Length: 227
Image 1 (spheres, rainbow, N blue to C red):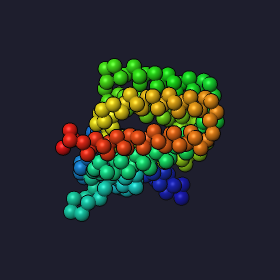
Image 2 (image 1 turned 135 degrees about the vertical axis):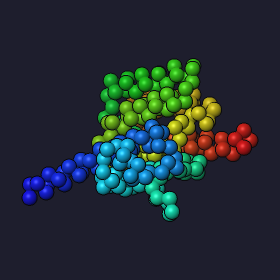
Image 3 (image 1 turned 90 degrees about the vertical axis):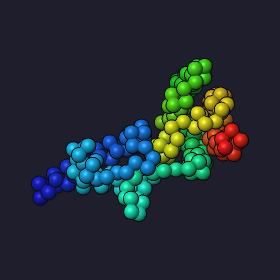
Image 4 (image 1 turned 30 degrees about the vertical axis):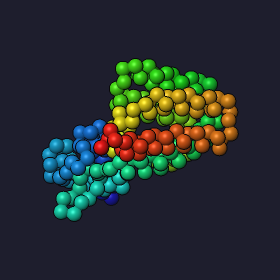
């Protein structure tokens, strides 16, 4: 009996390691959109058998990072601009609520940390590098989320950010001017939190901040320059 339990734990461990490995390769772009996940090939690359790899792929499919296509099999998910905008709207609502319930738990030292990250974003505007700016933007928002008492909500935020990271490495690179407005909105949001503004107001502003990015992307795709 103990041997069977040990084998089950080993399989679960390999499946978890496989999941983390494949997920990291998708998020960092090693496996780009449309990349076919061929089990035998992955097994040779990773040194892991196909059984835990299949379990990992099923989890990645649930995360929205992998899709199963008829006559093709498993491949890294492909997205269009409408899906990016939809995900931003979903994230806006999650982010608004998470920010509102995190705000009362943020001390002066926490706000200082968030302001320092935003200051680095301002400095980064001088020699603008969209991927680096996007990474700082993620760091800024998670400096607030980490105070959210709802673990499930934090997990949802992490999953949705991961999907967006895969969909588009940097929204800011596609939306001229959005980066500077974004850091201004960050500062306003921190001012509201510092002033003890009502949760409903913080939620509204945080939600509007993310929707503004979705709107900017939508307008960019409709602009003559994008045609």
